Length: 126
Image (cartoon, rainbow, N blue to C red; front, side, top):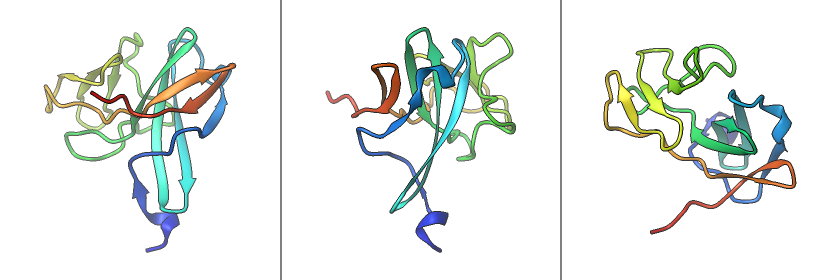
């Protein structure tokens, strides 16, 4: 298996993903980051001038959440939804509030907005 085929679950800080305008306010977008160690799959949800990021992996079955490109949210945009088994997650903290993995959490992907650009951040400690 080559590094291009290996899935990794974190990115280094300081990787610029693109302009905040790549994501409509209240929507989500998938990002794939190719690194030497392998490929990272994550997604970001935009709320105004901020984004919240998560690893694209459902804690229930360890599969990507969306079946269609960028389709991570419920129709009303209020929750993150796993298209495979119906798990529902809060956008703010990734906690599962409905479906087969209640109480589990999505893996956080720290993101920040700097000068209108989405940039990978560092995980909060403590």
